Image 1 (spheres, rainbow, N blue to C red):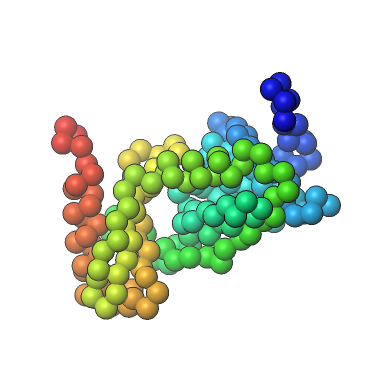
Image 2 (cartoon, rainbow, N blue to C red):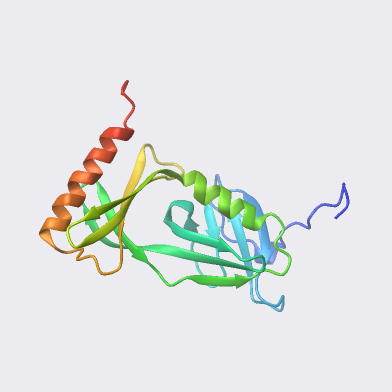
Length: 178
């Protein structure tokens, strides 16, 4: 692309139902370009073909760019505990992007920026990752735990140790002057 060559604007027919304070940052046609849809990155999240709603940056566990395909692994909430959610991987959704433009960069930057704290910890019978994410429009951090495969997530000892680890992480990340 030349110095003053700008990417075309998102066609109105492909524009997702953006929120009042939401703006498009980048987009790319998905698939072979024959009506497969578009992937749209906004300041609040990612709009994917076939989804009626936006996937918030804080709800993306993993995003991988292969150079041709964008693969997104959303989080699924499996349990609500005191002060945090237990999440699991949803199936990865993969999109072929023939002209990706700035989309892969925006996805990586926004997902990374949403993470305020992440640490992997052993728990009885396995391990889990504790994460604190920034959620647009929400004060403070949203805490989640994603257990490694095979970890007995429903075990009382696992829940008790996880509660302790999340509480310690919250204390460690709370500013002293609050």
